[in-house]
Image (cartoon, rainbow, N blue to C red; front, side, top):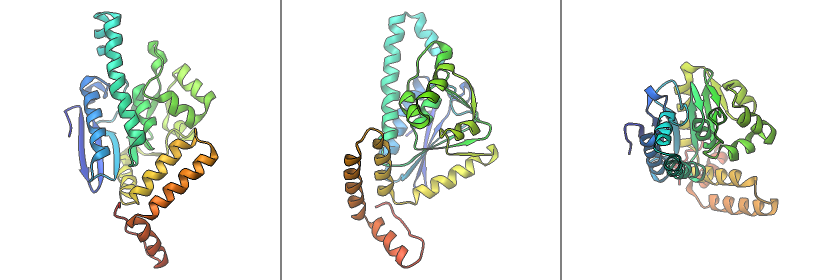
Length: 266
């Protein structure tokens, strides 16, 4: 499932979602919004996908919202613009929630410009790998807007309140290395190696114990707002559920037999 603005492909249990408006630096317009919603929904339910990669077809990940689209809406009247913006928020925010809640690891692979909603989208993913040439900015403040896409939620949890305030209120650009230093990015690699390193990371997760990875993702995402007693009970339930899978049996057997496990995702 795809449209011209967002492509979808599955190979070796890895679903790849590719943003594909290169001439516009993947600025978020209605076509890209619709494509992103459709492909993320598809990846979440695709039985052939055990890991998801979100990337771009060009050297830039996403430059944020399409400002020309916003200007066209404003020319139609403020109330019209506000109504259309709310429609976009409904769509892209459903996608952010889907990324955060799907029972599959989601890797974002970025290069070049990562701005505005591009950064919000990156923050929603489970792991982030970036080329050393990546330039990031939350950017909203530069156009007189506050952030969206869940960035205030994700950013505060990753970097803390003080740093989140700095990133959001000043809107300064920062490098991939600086992003890694504060935990926004997991790995920084040479631009020429980004595709290969992303594929290696995705293959590792796609051949892992899929159900256990899903439980782990849910536990970590819930931990910030969960009391320790409730978190312990959730861990008990998740471990017990994992113990009922074929992958758990394979993992135990492989350890005893001193070999590498061959997980099948069930």
